Amino acid sequence: MPYDYLLNTFVTLFVTIDPVGLAPIFMAVTAGMTPAKRRMTALRAVIIAAVILWLFSYFGEGLLASLGITLGAFRIAGGLLLFWIGFEMVFEQRSARKSETADKTASDPVDHDLAAFPLAVPLMAGPGSITAVILLSGEVPTGNWILQLVLVGIIGAILILCLLIFLMAGVIEKILGTTGRIIMSRLLGVLLAALAVQFVVDGVRELLAA
Image (tube, rainbow, N blue to C red; front, side, top):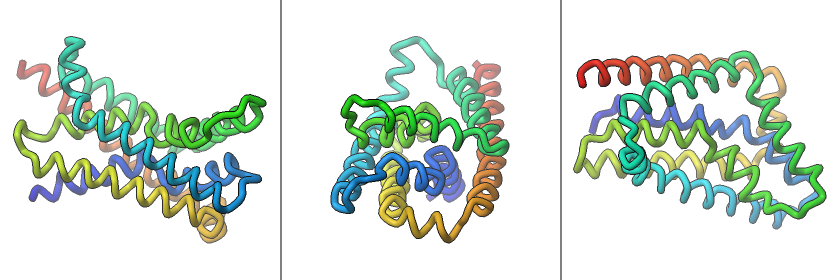
């Protein structure tokens, strides 16, 4: 088992999905719901996000091939996108953008399925996490089902962590506080930016080799 792939996959997906950062947004979006309805909303959101990310982990690379996009080019583009997400986290811009999306949905008089939007898409299964899943899937050698299952398992594990955090959102927010949340967001942002640069470097090497 290549533990570097396991660690890289976990860190990349944990940072891009950002379970801890979603806790206050989940509380804001589901404000006024009964505890039972809030639990059901959290469960449905996690299931929807899992299905989307699992589909992209399996079919994402084939979709790129059908569009004539090489994995090297996608690594560069995806790395730049992930770098921007890391940049937003370091300078505390990402939470504000996610909160704005949640506020727009909450203030809209139309009855939305909050589990599907904005919780599942784009907050959990958004451009950043979908890009990360396709990039990580592209690093799995053809026919290596063990690593493919590792990727699927880590996606599931992080989304289960999201579910647990949603169910304990109030407690976690009190423990971390505003300062703790900001510090964690910035540290994870630096990690994601470094991983994004590595994706770009790998993509450039692949294009040059081709």
